[in-house]
Length: 261
Image (tube, rainbow, N blue to C red; front, side, top):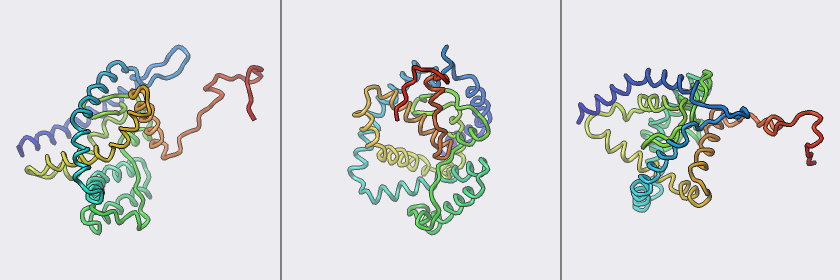
């Protein structure tokens, strides 16, 4: 078992350069333009819908019941501690990408946050850094590639992994190699990974139920929400405003334009 896990980790590391190259290529060519010039970020919609249905079926029949059972038997304070623990382990990926994006002040703040929560917060079980004025940030390798000028590329639904874009696929690799769980030997790796997945799914139960109740087409709803969220993160919470003149193809002097004051 230990040999198998070590081999899998080594395989991830070997695959990362190829993943990065593939992402750059996909980001450059995996979007299409319609005759009116609008960009289609979902050129693989037929396949994406099939994968979405597969993932959704697996989630409804397995992950949701497990997550509901977990939430039912696990008190909320305990779940909060578990969430803090895994969030802290994943935070090294945020630290790395803050520096890769040239955000030095934020990078040092993130590094200090990780160190304080790991030590004073007892391995990240308690978030003591936020009250000390060290806020949590959301940075990943997809955002780093955006800063470096890589286009978003196609919207993707990946089997078992869920929603993504071509540009953000390498984040699987960077989050994997920066997570300390990756380097835990023996049989501890698997139960910790399973606990992380179940706890994360339990934290999203309310959101998934909202999607079911509020949307006629859950696929389109989740796609647009995900892409808007990615845009929000890439622009650090300040996405560019829409150019409405361009959006509605309004030309100066067009008497058909209705102005509402």
